[in-house]
Figure 1 (tube, rainbow, N blue to C red):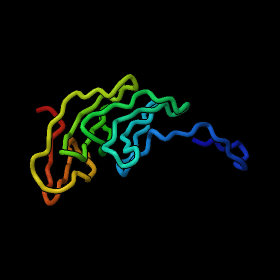
Figure 2: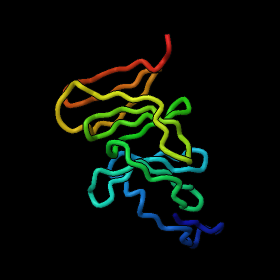
Figure 3: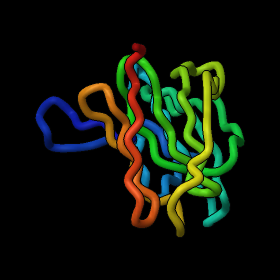
Length: 138
């Protein structure tokens, strides 16, 4: 992280981090914390959280493999690229807290798509299959 001075003429390094070696799934900044997955040296990867302001590692936990992350309605929705696990995760810097999960069983190939949320629904693509899940209770 770098900080730009008030005159926008210089920068200073605040911290350097190698934990959030994010592959291609993006990161979420929420309430001063950075959430996402890593893939350190092309390994399966973990789920991690950093303090945005200091770079302090809050957690670095294994849950299936790395994957895509989106945020809505106070929750993280994660889609794991290895074996297609989908998890509803409470964003909490004290640990990776999976509230519920299920596994994608349709489609073929890598689970590389990103979850997309719209109008109370989660859209997930796996290969040539598009699945839509209602996120609202009846």
